[in-house]
Length: 311
Image 1 (tube, rainbow, N blue to C red):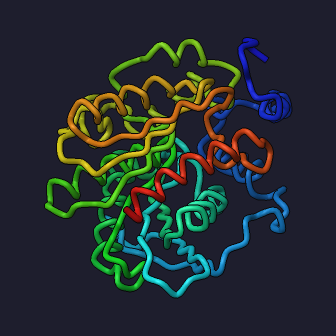
Image 2: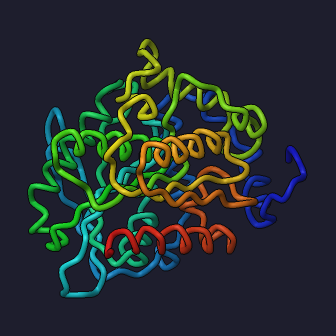
């Protein structure tokens, strides 16, 4: 275990278990996906998932055909905000099942209808496929909001690569004159042109490492201008964007990336709540069952997002 700052001991135990597994960057993408599913889904006891009133699998239009999606509804007949959610995984791994707990928590804790979108993955579908799917799906969900939350309020949310996509969708909706209620960006990847200090300080041993970050980018966007706003939202116009909750973690290589984006949003006049949670690692948003500190952080961040959604 590298370092000895204030790493949450329950997450340290998780990292000890993961230390014996081959790193993602040494695997073929299909093998990496299977390994990630085995880690996050296959050994999971369904009884440990947060209960929710209903979960329905549907399809929504992507940029090149329908993509899978999953609708989470809390137990209320009232009109609610609709959250379009994008899962993390470096645009290469992850799916609706690996981030099922994230969708359930968002719906329950934010009192909203969540539509999680399973966009196309690289390298089979490289940049800008994931971005294009996210935009197309969000447009369709917003156009059909009466069949989801029914309140007229639509927001976006995502973690890591999903946070990247959520930030990009927020910029598109602003440009189209379709204001979103809010955006939740959990340890988002927003700037591929800059290697922030946290990528060095936390670049090895904390679940996501620097070699895996480089491997993800090689699969998704090997020859793309790193300042293209569709890849790096930091280089887009940030004025007039919806209020944001930005979440970062002390031991995350992407900590400084998310913090810089939060600061840039604030400088552009966007209302921002930024939480930098001590002791936590990249991926903690799905680790509330393993770490009480992670669960407390989830509840804190989602409470702030709920305030924006229902404000």
